[in-house]
Image 1 (tube, rainbow, N blue to C red):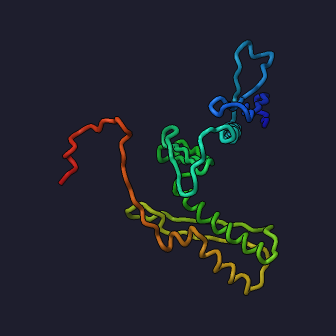
Image 2 (image 1 turned 135 degrees about the horizontal axis):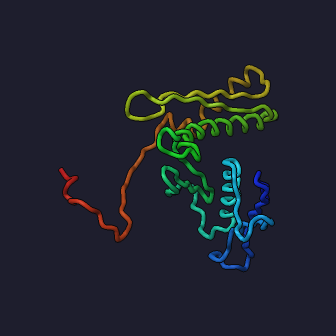
Image 3 (image 1 turned 90 degrees about the horizontal axis):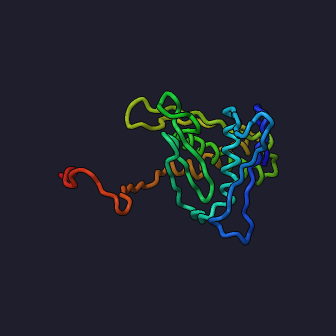
Length: 218
């Protein structure tokens, strides 16, 4: 997988992962050639867009060589990257979240709230697409736009959410049926009938907890 940078570099991101090679020895390979002006020091200057693309290529190849078994359905792991950025692992897939610059983040990825809204919109798009398939209608022209508003008062939350689903021309009867189907997508149902949330805070084995263990009792 090659990318050409504006500084004139060609960066090739591949992997070394033969089937007979033990998983811990498999590697992601990042390769770029020396240029006459390098003088023994190899470097690459990337635009923000190029850096994101390179990061995507590295994550793609990392997932292909990662020896860790993917978690099954129903489990999500979140680990810190740097600052307010976190890595999300879902069944072997990797996403990231961050915070906007005004909120102290680096804006390298969507916020958790934006991913929440994205989940609603993409779930609606999935149901709409399946509806069109079922009725033999092309998905061309299908799109979903979501708008949201945060609450002015506490607790912090999304106070309002709106969806606009655009589809190819359908008869009024089909439009009504589509609206009924989309309004009951899995994520929308999870909001209408909110799930129970159990929270447990654990310390890593062997870690010492500072302070008075009785301080929070009573």
